Length: 253
Image 1 (cartoon, rainbow, N blue to C red):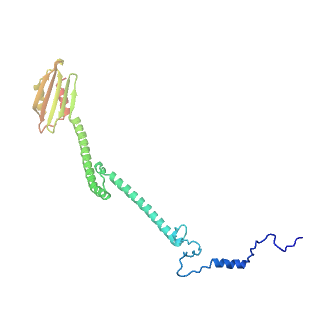
Image 2: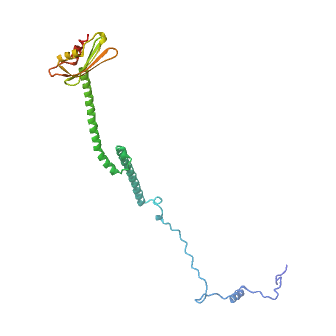
Image 3: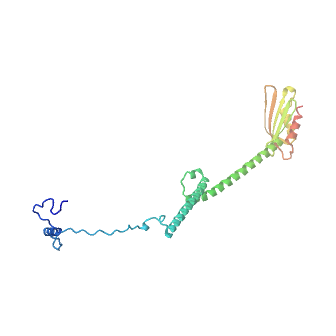
């Protein structure tokens, strides 16, 4: 074995330096830096210490963080909504009632845009008008009923006061015109041999208390004679139309 008495490579006459001498040599080249008041250098503030983030719980709504105060707010809001709904329903009912009142007014008033107070005022003034109309209709009804009854009574009287008697060739019609007047129409056929003159008829009527007021006679082409007599009854006369017609018809057998 070879003895390690000398290095393998030559140091070329450079002595080996120890670490201590090298450190001293470095210090001699770069002297240590000592800050002074006159020296110029950059200063940085120290970093802040690490802390957990702060969370503001008041920033969140009451639903996220329930609390007695948040519950009271919710209850108050619910009461307000219920009150608004009730008030809305009440106004709808009132508007419906006012609309019903307006429908009772005349068509001219319904076309107007009346406010609620104006509607009440118009209704109050319209009620007396309706009452007057009802009273007028009642009076008109009574008048019509009276006229109908009077017409029926008059028809019955005419039936009683007007009477006609007929024979084979003659017709006598007698009717009462008033309390003391009568009208007589006589139609007879001269071809049948009835030659009674108007004078004979008037004599018969005078005997019964009737006075001639007006008379007219004419003859047709077929041989018939027509007499129209307007007579006035004396106060003592009690002759009825039916009795007078039968008496005159006896003159034309």
